[in-house]
Image (cartoon, rainbow, N blue to C red):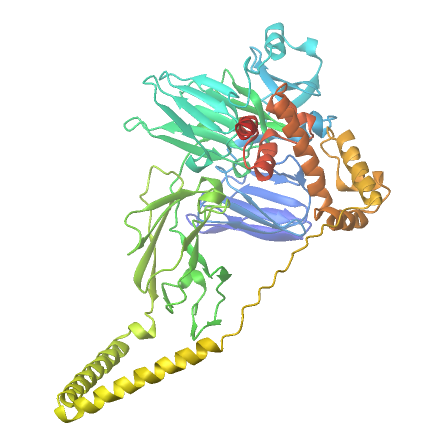
Length: 629
């Protein structure tokens, strides 16, 4: 038997709000008086003032699955986030403004295989029902339903004719290619063109701009571009969704990226699969599901905390608390409580880590930082791995070969790169001078230099005095003449005794060991097997080893011995060679080649191709032509 009570401060009375026959674990209350009580069989949500309560035996996760384990502990943080500690499924986090996109994942598509859930296009009827076309068939989505099965598979002829015609009309661009994947002329008359390697903007003035991940895009492969009824521009990519903002005064372009932390798909979005409904909701189709956004949920609150110093790395090694480095302990306290750092002159290759504690949406974390004494102005970066932020909202700042002196590192964080009005975190840094540049050492050097100068002057005076003595001039002259005669005799004797020069020539022989017939036949058979299955995306090392009647370990050792390559790299290289051959033939576009050689996506093919040949697939044919000329 377990009870929960609430004390009303105004009435000065206690009131029982819950009584159960089983034990309760944790009770927390938010700022609005809503109590959350965890137990072995779910969670209770109770309004302490109205006594209205709801019981959730199972909680929905963002991927559509259910949380069906005991909830051990609860916590509301100062950002309005809700933390749940479970018995055996880790820690979960929820924020009312975090998952702004509704994720309709594979679990919603009943009876469909994972490879068939590729949303290709959307349409709508007059009742607000959304229809979508997938590889596996047609579905109806009812956004008005809050609970229950909102997505159901239907027959194509049950779709209203107008909506059906739109679903069956082709959505891909007529002249679709790797340099023209999407297109939009916005309300300003600006022309946006998506490509497989960035976003291209052509202004009416004729000025051309290109934007990449370094400018804020979540991925360089653009799948679709949409301008909604509020003139906001939305871009889907091979990973993530971007909202494009244009400064009305400067005309500068800013990108706000949304990843799975905001509720978007984990995988790729599909080409041209974007739609704005009559109610203003936005739909983005992709592989294994689609995302839904109600634009009214795009609220941006100021981050409540200043960035926290979390880690220090010295020459790539993490600095541990209380550990000696050289002759000093660098971190006496834990990093968040450190305000000053003292280092030796050779401890000047440093990496600092800061966190903005943006649990609500780590991918929407922007930073600016400045090391006073080194940086002349603020440096800005955002949540990208190649721009100083590790992708989880944690900032990494690196400085190499810092000269000795005193510095102050300042860091700011924001969830909007156009507003920097939050608190500033500061960290004092002192790098001591080497011993030969300290004041005592400089004084010693001055004294030593003075002694040497005085000694040189004394020696010069003494030498001058002796040279002026006339009594020794003749003796010195005779001595020099005798020395010259002796040196001449020595040189003549050495010349007569020189041995004859003997030249020896050594011929270098280079040998090259070739493969025997059995090894050649093995490699030829392995390549044929990969080529026969080259269109099978999931043709793996295990399947190749089974086809060769070998175990995985034996195949690995064999290929390492013969080619110095792992089986997975061997399979990938065969696919890339076939892709290069098809590119030179010029009969297929990159998307078709990607499917022909068994790569999962064009962007992954481009990444591997660049590693193998040093250029993107779209540049390969031109590169080979230039080499032949």
